[in-house]
Image (cartoon, rainbow, N blue to C red; front, top):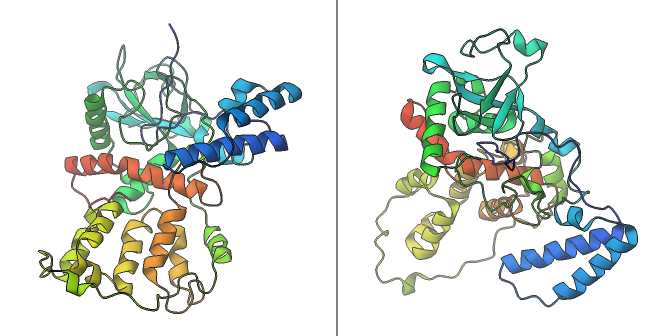
Length: 394
């Protein structure tokens, strides 16, 4: 029987660290050809007309180069850009745990482990882990050392594997901080089980992990999807990187806005108070908010203020991108009297998880992808236990 991979319940990525990064050739021309193929696919995905060289020309030169340099064609087509993926920025994949259901319906958080094969998560604690085992772990002569079925149960109860980092992101989505000890394990296991049963998947939880193609029968390192495995952990240095990218006029206020009032004849939102709009925005996706602003001039005018867009940044960006908090406390970082709508749109754009992404925000984009994926799980968890409202999709 052919083997298959199971994936992190929270991010959909591989719950193991690659023995070596699956990267392509670092030959300069091979890199140029790789990036040309990715750029072409990116334009195609965006629906843009392509006026550059044809696929046939690129592919013919690529095959010729692979033969000249003895580069594996299969590896080039199933590997990442060697300048984007390094051992350091995929190390976070190594730290994995699972939630499992033991005897007497007691849920345990496992010590560290990894995905083995054929749907099995291998729990392998070290000496320090053995001294701090979850009391709900099943007993036995080798307590703590378990091979547990992922997502479906055969001879044992099913478990749900995830990366330590992803579990911390989930805690932040629920509580506003990464303290995973606050998570009720039983309620979370039941929430995961409910989503998994509804999806029927044997490999992942069934959340919307974004438009990534790596989650096949076995993991595929798709060129252009480097962001999906890049380290999403907090980066305290990122605010300095952002400040170096900004120019004094980047977020300057527009000189004037056109008056469209004469074109509005009847708008049901005319009498809606500003406070109600602010109360509703955390429950809407950013796309829905912009659709509302485009559809209603009264709401557009009511929200055309610095306070509203500072609120949008706080609710829809700072929740998953807390490192940039100090940008808004420094009078120099954003310039004098910045247009906070422009600030919001810029931050929202540069952190968008999308095919072909590169640059300093690639790990932040992966964090945003994970944050979006776990929102239904966070909501379902809170339905099972009282707690604060999780932050909405971004």
